[in-house]
Amino acid sequence: MEDCIFCKIINKQIPSEIVYEDEEILAFKDIAPMAPVHILVVPKKHIASVMELSKEDELLVGKIYTVIQKLAKEFNVSEEGFRVITNCGEGAGQTVKHIHFHLLGGKKLSISMC
Ligand code: 5GP
Ligand code: ZN
Image 1 (cartoon, rainbow, N blue to C red):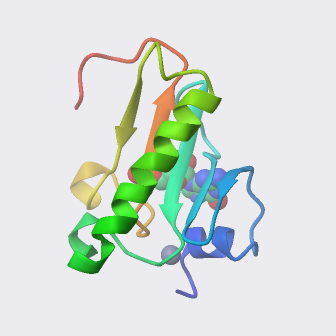
Image 2: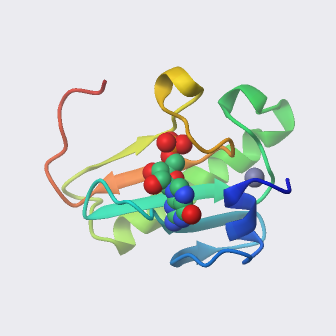
C-alpha cells in the first residue's frame, strides 16, 4: 500500500525503533508513547483493520499474540500487567489504517477501558 505509513515503516522507507522482526511481523516503538512501554505490533501484510481480517489470517493473529507475550517479558511488564489494544474504525480512534496491536505498560493503567 503506497500511502500507508506502517507499510513504509515495514519497508524501511520511514525510520522507526524496531524491537522485533520476523518474516511476517514487525514491532516498533510508538512515536507518541502513552505509557513507558508503548509498542506497536503489526503484520507485514497490509490489512486495514479487524474488519478486513479473513480466515487465512487466523494463524497470523495467533503469532502476533506470541510476539506480544515475548515483548511483555522482554520489556518487564508481564508480571505487573499490561494492556493490548486494537482500535477499529474512526469511532474507536483508529488513525492508521493498517491493523496494529498497541502493547501498553510500565505504569498503573486506568481501570476504565473507554
Ligand atoms: P491508532 O490511533 O490508529 O490506534 O494508533 C496509531 C498509532 O500509531 C498512534 O499511537 C501513533 O502515535 C502511532 N504512529 C503514527 N505514525 C507513526 C510513525 O510514523 N511512527 C511510529 N513509530 N508510530 C506512529
Ligand atoms: Zn499498510
